[in-house]
Length: 454
Image (cartoon, rainbow, N blue to C red; front, side):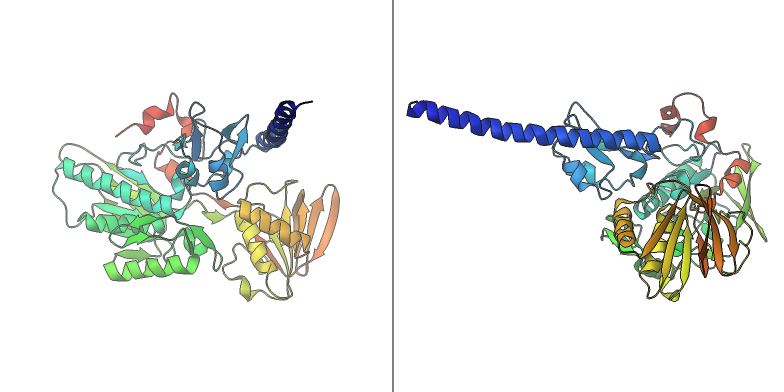
């Protein structure tokens, strides 16, 4: 065999080794991603709840940059050499995938809204099917402080333009705008309304501002991404702790003297009617008085009133529905009920306190609707014995010093000092339905026709 043959043979073997290794790795990764897609479909988490990354397959080059950029890690995957949405329900709308794509094959789009009974119909200006009634923030289906701030400001811009186009003179005895909720969306809307010169008032049902953020556990980090709070300026960090955000909110309220009335829980919304002489008015009734305004912006969260288990013993004082400061609970036996981020984050915070014995009870056989970093942290804590998981279990009775669980036909009694029930809340949808706001499950035809309304 001459030297040329040896060179060509060695080159061919090297080529086959490289290409073969790549092909084997590609096939292994592809099979893994396809299994993830199948599992997501079986669990019902493949469909996005609202925003999700739309991948144009005609442009995607399968580089995987979007997969690596996603902070949730498992929203996207590579299947057949192309990026696909695997766990759409876990997308939180940050948009890092869109920025990471080198060929512009990804954009954030609105998921399929047809048949959704938990998302109110809104135009692109965030107006509901009730003229003059707008929604911003979590109540409209989008999570994240950034989205709430953006929507609050955007809704007010549309309202200010509409009032200006209306041409009717302002009435000193009646505000142009009532903003319900003093969380991120409500405060952003208030700052924007002040900048637009609108006569407005903010109604908050709690005695503290912050909305959903106020309910977060101590030192909980929340995504904001770079976003501009009207008048105040940019919030440039990618994450803020609960305490940092509340400090900013308090500074904003004090510096700009925002008119907020606390302890005002809205119980009904009524359209007072309209004609050429008197443009439409909206009346809000709270627990102790009535307010009339030209426009209303609902900046409410989706947590609502905590949902209860409905089991014997739930009235005991040791049963609570939120953890604001885990450091208050030490050397205790604690059960957290639920399988979402709130329950998992609470359990992890409590498990890190000295002497605590923490368990989680969840009705499903797997905890899957949580952020990837929460899932990874939970796995570490369970392996270290800091948290005990009771999957496929339900609480059947709460006793003064124990809890009864039913798990796969067996009844377990576990010692207990505190129970934190975090199984969601009774959402404020009855308020919207009472006001005749339509939801997407009540809509026939193409959702884009409604979204395109001015």
